[in-house]
Image 1 (cartoon, rainbow, N blue to C red):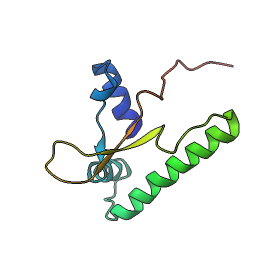
Image 2 (image 1 turned 180 degrees about the vertical axis):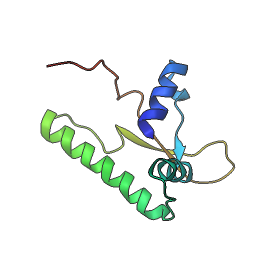
Image 3 (image 1 turned 90 degrees about the vertical axis):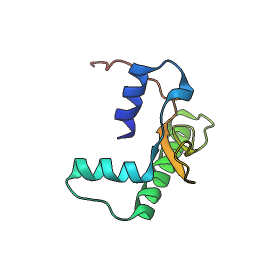
Image 4 (image 1 turned 135 degrees about the vertical axis):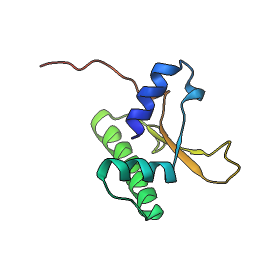
Length: 104
């Protein structure tokens, strides 16, 4: 879901601040639609995103030796414009780069 949104924003804007975060609730709905079942537990989705962030950080540090933070690839951002407090998630447009597949 994050990848698809990232690619859509990449096609529509060249500015990194225009890349949209997705709320945990919209993420739950999108994943539920793809899997054919509704996700009810917000805490589980948040923990899954946290694990993904930590796993990506560990893998990049271990394999590439780069000093990154857990939010450098999958960002957690303050949710703006809805009138509610909360957070949204997105792939970091300053760190994620799309390149063509290489056959090998």
